[in-house]
Amino acid sequence: MAYPRLEIFLDKIRHNSRRLTEICNEFNIEVVGVNKVSCGSKEIAQAMLDGGVQIIADSRIENLEMIQEIKATKMLLRLPMISKALKVVELADISLNSEIKTIRALSEAAESLNKIHKIILMVDVGDLREGIFNEKEIMEVVEETIKLEGVQLIGLGTNLSCFGGVIPSDKNLNKLVNLKTKIKEKFGITLDILSGGNSSSMSLIQQKNMPKEINQLRLGTSIILGTVEINNTRIDNTYIDAFRLVTEIVEVKEKPSKPIGKIGKDAFGKKPYFEDRGIIKRAICAIGKQDIDIDWMWPEEKEISILGGSSDHLIVDITDSLKEYDVGDEISFTLDYVAALNAMTSPYVHKVYK
Ligand SMILES: *Cc1c(COP(=O)(O)O)cnc(C)c1O
Image 1: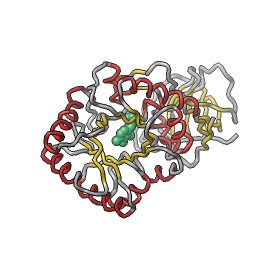
Image 2: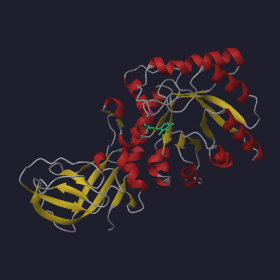
Image 3: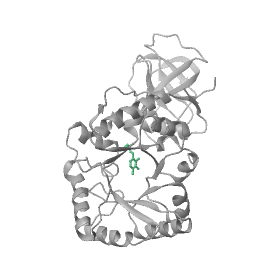
């Protein structure tokens, strides 16, 4: 067996996808399965589709290229780079946009390929990441977009709780609803899609506060982990452990809990603090911050805990463990979203599909 390895339980991802789509479809909301955590894994994209998600999305065009042969409607989440307009039209059916210059380039690229590329116009309702902020500009962009031959404006979208940490509410999502009405009055077109955000917007479904006109959500974290992180809840009957990291121990020793000598900075420029708990038993696992974010993972065995790490070492307190760990043994971890993303990205971590 290769170490470190990331075991990916496709049946759990399929199950979580099914749960989330069931919940959303009940509110007439279609689910876009966001696959960006997997760095373009075909297996995970397919598991989401088998679980019922209606569209597959990624923020990077390179990842959409990796899943090119998967049959599904595909969406590009990050605003397209204008220099990649042709690739975007080639590989994605839908993209999220906020710049008329880019939309023009997409239209031209689509025409050259004899395609119609679908556009969701991003509206910034307050989180201040991507999206058009003022209404006058929205109306101008809509007016020009609907005249372009290579693109079709299918809806409005927004993104929340990313840059600004703004919580989704019926108030901020109703801005999309009102804009849809104004666009209909002014231009006589009915937009099909109101894309109401990411996993954080699941909180509005939980509170039964979702405006009924919102008919699409783009879900990554809630499918992968079954959690709604914004309110620290779990969606019942979902798995949190679809990703499991298995590492190999390279040292087991008893050492003082507090380093000896004057403490300056650690390998990452921070001044660490250590409580003196006497002699403890520790293991070093062969993985490090080059591969994972050690703040976003936890050991499967409840009696052990992470003490810290550097680029290539992870130090674990095994004093209270029920097992007798030895060099060459395994220690396994459950990963949160960030650690899963890092582990998927690291070429040093072997990926094993279960
Ligand atoms: C990443 C992303 C999502 C999915 O976010 P989760 O919180 O993981 O559900 C949705 N929309 C956009 C635009 C994104 O970049």
